[in-house]
Length: 104
Image (cartoon, rainbow, N blue to C red; front, side):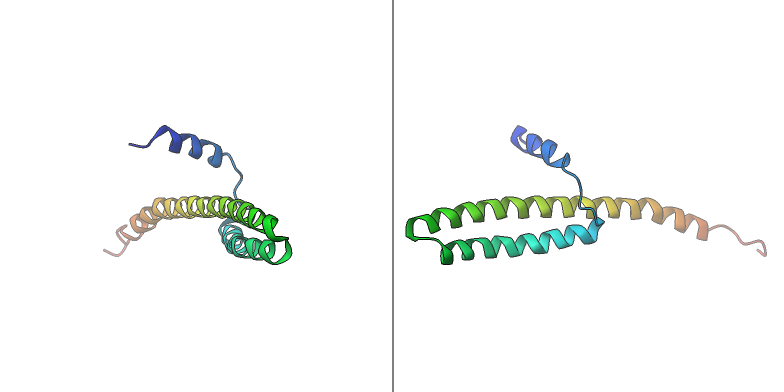
């Protein structure tokens, strides 16, 4: 049984639009999000002053981590939909092949 917190999280995240490029666009989002998750804290550490760089790096990591989690969730959602559509189409293709031929 899922907790109410997970149900609330799924409701708002399911309302987000999918990547415009379908599964390929979702993969691009995940890859670029991973680059942001690594790059933003590095940029903050190298370019800011002493006390601020730690704050900016933590904030950048939190933002990039949130975006990356969203991108991965939406990618998994699209892959699950694609697999479900393939499962629905697959039995129909197999049923057509089992039809008796006219010669038998």
